[in-house]
Image (cartoon, rainbow over the protein chains, first blue to last red):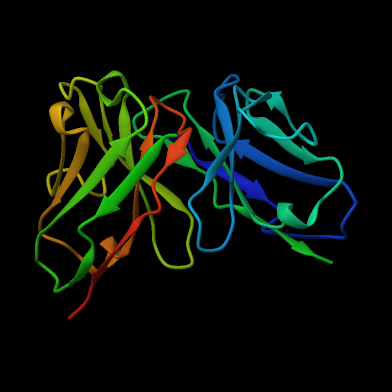
Length: 108
Length: 116
């Protein structure tokens, strides 16, 4: 099973600033990496797949990068609606599909 | 508009059984793979099960294998999760999610609480 590790667990950022979230895989997942956003009381929403491709309707301020075992989600200028929990998920070697533990982006 | 609506959650005792349903609309259900993903209270996401578009191929997480059974009825645009021998650690919001290996649409979830 591929273990996904996200850091930091919590990220405090001021509106308008850049946020950089990290995700590490226990073995290479190539570019088979997705990112999701989840707001309180809501279902997750797909942001990024293929490590760097934005899903339909996702604003350009969200970008993904990386391959192999190291990945980054960058939010270039945080808006109020971006404060949420973000999860990475690998789909390279499954089952099982595995998620990271999440990074909570909170208002500084 | 794609819609996924889960139902069937509730409170039950350890060892009990429950059947969740996911009603799909707004897309050609029979053409899409579907999954169940759960989230324990205050915790992260855990993939539970995958069902192919035909229903012929199904995978499970080790944590539920042998206890949970996923199925689908394409004529009814519905996905199901039969959960048996429930444990306290199965307490979670259960989401159905569309997709082969990434999930582009999710339901609102249904809460399953296992407690004596």
